[in-house]
Length: 445
Image (cartoon, rainbow, N blue to C red):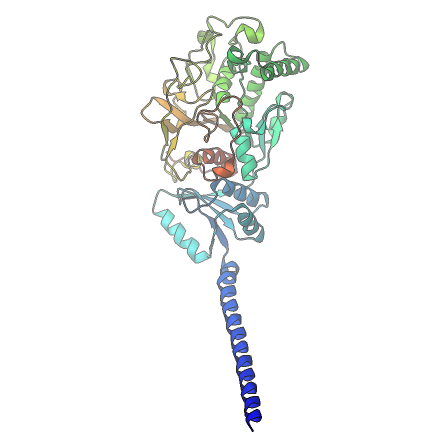
C-alpha cells in the first residue's frame, strides 16, 4: 500500500512538472509574438524613414551616404530644411534599412499620419521641404600622387560611402568635366607656385618630386611652364561652372583659383615657377569681372613671403600677419525664401571651431557685392564660407584645410572620421555634395 501511494505521488509530480513546462512554453510563445508584433507592425505600416540630423543622430556623416544611396536607386527623397538639424526623408525600403543598420545611422519609421504632423509643424516655422531628384556625379580634381588624407573632401566622401571619380590636368584640358554635376578641387595652387612651399621645403624630396612631376605634366600637355598649365585648367573650370556645373573648393584652391581666372593675361607668378618675376603692375591688370566671388584684391609681390594676396584674412604662414583661431558662425537663412544658402548651412551646430589652411578665411572687403556669406568669423571682418551663382552654375568656397585638424601641418597624420562621426565642419562639406541633387526653387527675395 505504501509503495502504491509513493508511485501515485510520483505520477502526480510528473503531471505537475509537465503542466508547468507547457505553461512556460505557452508564456514564452505569447511574449515572442508580442515582441514580434512590436517590431514588425511599424515596419509593415511605415511608408517613410526620417533620418534626424539633430543630436539624436548617431552618425551624421554616414547619413549623407545613406541619402545618396537612396538617390542612386531613384527613390523619392526630401531634404527637410531646418527641421531637426536638416533631416532627410527617405522611402522605407529594405535596402535603406539595411544600410542604415550597417552604418549606424539613426532612422525613425513614419506612417502618413506622422509625416502629416511633421509637415504641419514645418509649415508654421522657418522650415521647408526640398525634393532630392538624383545622385549627382561627383569628380575630385586631385593629383595621382595625392594621399587620401591630403584632402578633407576625399576623406568625407570615403567615410560617407559616396562614390567619386578622380580627374587631373589631362582630363580637365581634354574637356572631360561635362560628365560631372559636382566638382571639388583638391588643395591646388592654380597660380602654379606650389603654394610657395619652395620657401620652406625646396630641399625636401617630396617637394622636389612634386615639382618634377608637374613640370613634366605641363610639357606633355604642351604648356611652356606650370603657371601656364594651371591658368588653362582654371579657365576650363570657370567655363564648367558658367555652363551649369557646381564647383566646391577649400583651402588654397579657393584663393588661387580666383587669382588664376582674373590673371589669365597677367604674370602673377614668381620666377621660381616660370623663370620671370611677377608683373609689377599685376594689381592694375587683373580682370576681376571673370572671377567668381572676389574683386580688387592686392597680390603679394614678394616671392619670399608665403602669401598669395590679401583675400586670405588669416595669413597663417606669414609671421607678424598670422591671426589666432577663434570661432565662426553660420548665418541663419529663410528656408522658404532663400533655400539654396539654407541647404548649404544645414547643421546641428550654429557656432563652430575655426581651423587653419593655406587660405583660412576671406576678407570681406575683397568680396563682390553678390557674394553670399554663409558663415562669418566671429568679431572679425572676415568670412569663412561663401557662395554664389555664376552663369548657369554655382560655386562654394570653404576656408581652411581640415575641420577636425585646426593646426594642420605638412605630413600630419590623417583624420579618422570614425572618431568624429558627427563633425559639424565635415557636414558643411557634405551639404555641398547633395546640393546639386536638390530641385531648387527660385529665390523669393
